[in-house]
Image (cartoon, rainbow, N blue to C red; front, side, top):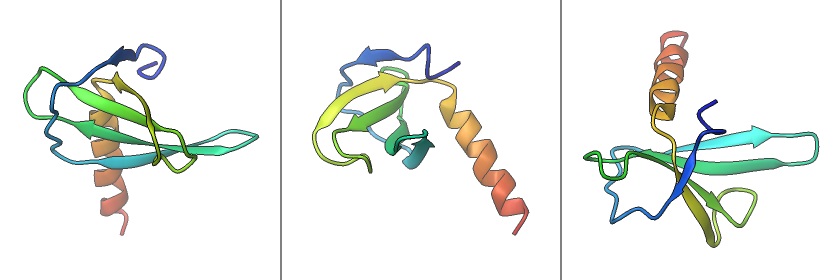
Length: 83
């Protein structure tokens, strides 16, 4: 739902709090993108798509995905608790 509702933005000098690389697998490929919650509310949480499958290369766009950071933080805490 969060990804479907993401809006393209042009962030203004975002300062990342942390960065996660998320991979999405389809029947045909795996694509990786960066997710970065930023300081302040001007930029929110950003998802950046690169031109190469592993998320690097040319920046093809940034999207605001507020709320995705909470899902990733919960997943990280949950995986750490199982170790």
